[in-house]
Image 1 (tube, helix red, strand yellow):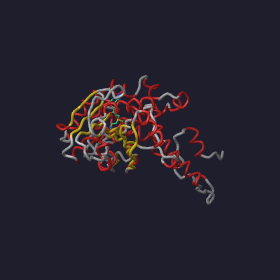
Image 2 (cartoon, helix red, strand yellow):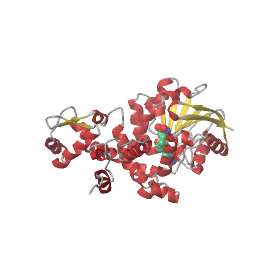
Image 3 (cartoon, rainbow, N blue to C red):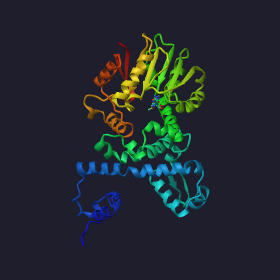
Image 4 (tube, rainbow, N blue to C red):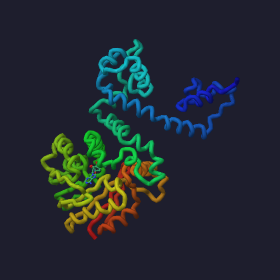
Length: 372
Ligand SMILES: C[S@@+](CC[C@H](N)C(=O)[O-])C[C@H]1O[C@@H](n2cnc3c(N)ncnc32)[C@H](O)[C@@H]1O
């Protein structure tokens, strides 16, 4: 039967690729009849994107096994490594071959395995933070995203449908997961803080309050750039436990006052500049308004508020990363990425008015507001 091997393989296994057929498809076509059309290229791209779950699962399992750290700088037989990791040797060998396909491991000519370049990036302490990233993605985002349909059908964050509680309550109850998220974000925020610190106006500013500042990634950068400034970090009490460690590691802990509380209720903090970075996007309009009202009540008349997060442009299709973040908020938190006019409305409802808007590198925008 002249059944296409490729078509049959696809029917048997939805994970099967054209290139998996061992001949880029054209091996099964008469010579000269295979034309790579733009449509096929697009389909190939989507197929690869759909199959990206393989990469996430492989990297996650490697990290959870502690495999990149255990392999270290030496080469291992699958049997020795299985003994060290206390796992099934034949299954580990197949798993290692899978890691080789991702560049996480390398197969050496003598049959042993060593770390590949991406395996090094997955070691604990790697500046890439990829081990934390894959752990958070798989443990906190994977199942809710697989349940996206629930959000679209019912308008409820899939996270709550899957885990039975909202994301911040979950992160508080699951301290390890919450701490991992805050630690990861602090590293990311600190790493991307230079343009934010440069865009902030410190004229007449002696005290900065970072509201929902997590472990203090932005404050650490502010304190290093402005030696005369003192800071207040306001967040949930549980988050502040890890913040102490982070700020100490950056040598700035002595200049930060930690204040625990709930910004939906009250922000009992007096400062000249209030910062809300990547906070409002996590909340629906009613909650975002409550946070802004708490800020307004806390602000002395001359104080400023800087909101820093991605904005949704008028033509959302021009900003795929803002669109994806908006969807991520819809699925995980019930929040949203907002446009300038949506921010203006929300701020006005909280008794604040926009003074200026500063677009920054890295897709973030700063919206500066003062009490009306
Ligand atoms: C996405 S993180 C942003 C952290 C930090 N601003 C940054 O960009 O790196 C949001 C922060 O809001 C805090 N948060 C959530 N609910 C809160 C509440 N009700 N009161 C105070 N902080 C809260 C979380 O603990 C978390 O640190």
